[in-house]
Length: 141
Image 1: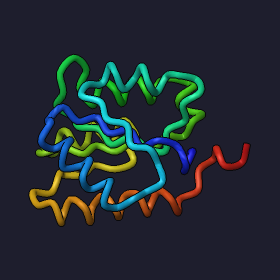
Image 2 (image 1 turned 120 degrees about the horizontal axis):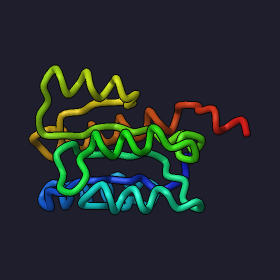
Image 3 (image 1 turned 180 degrees about the horizontal axis):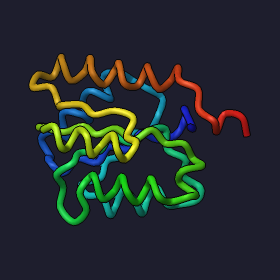
Image 4 (image 1 turned 90 degrees about the vertical axis):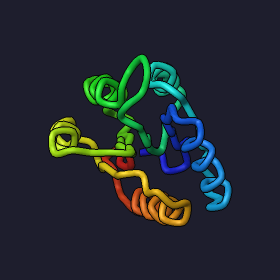
């Protein structure tokens, strides 16, 4: 896990994306935050051999490639597995099946997007601070 790498946010709802832009600006993390509106664009970016993201926050319902399809491609790619990129779902709604399916794909978190900016900010802060403290196998290269 590259704690100084970019935070990848995959969100097709432009209003939600703008809210996240403002929150990340306010929280002032040193990581670059890179936004994508679909999984294909994100996968292309993540697959670049020189890019080692810190973590991925992915919506589930997106055009072209949904979050589950993207997670599957990241999870089954040997090169990406060695990058130890935490993959978290961040979505507006959930049901038992989607949560079970997500954890069956070894996601590291499943979050419902809070409906207020303050709650969303607190959630983002908790997520980032948790992963900044976490140790990954890639730290022992």
